Image 1 (cartoon, one colour):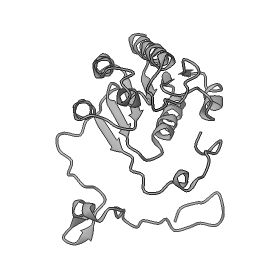
Image 2: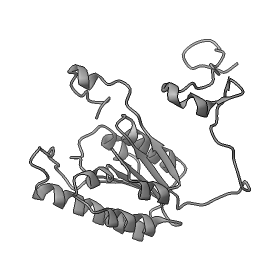
Image 3: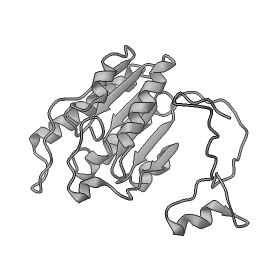
Length: 218
């Protein structure tokens, strides 16, 4: 029995996770029964320090939210956090929370208009360049957790070069915990990372004509 802040004691739901995609079922079945973990653990169990690389990518929502949650968790135990946003204008709700947490340093180079069908313009390249310089400086200055929100999406439009992202990863490896988000991630970046999670979109009200809502989508 688990205590609940919203009512009497409730029995937790411990139903095993069943994947949405039936093609994945083979990964989550053993002897015909659902299992929690798709891989067996290997190697010695040991403590590791900071300096691992996270990639959160995909068409599904939640990548920035994952970064925000991790930033707050890390700040809660006293880590120095740098949260840098690429391809955004710095107007989403989490920024108001960051401003009240002393050990989270939020940086966004300013306005970032949508990239239209004609492709990126000078303002987009300048925005990405400034954000990357902030990230490199944070890594050099000893940031413990560095979150580069949407940095992977800059590669889709050619605003940054893959080599620049790889350089950032190499600078952080073994020193600064690095989190990168975006719509896609190439195989070589995935191979370099320690954590990789793909966010898959199943449904989204945007495609039914809904407008983005403050506090939910941004």
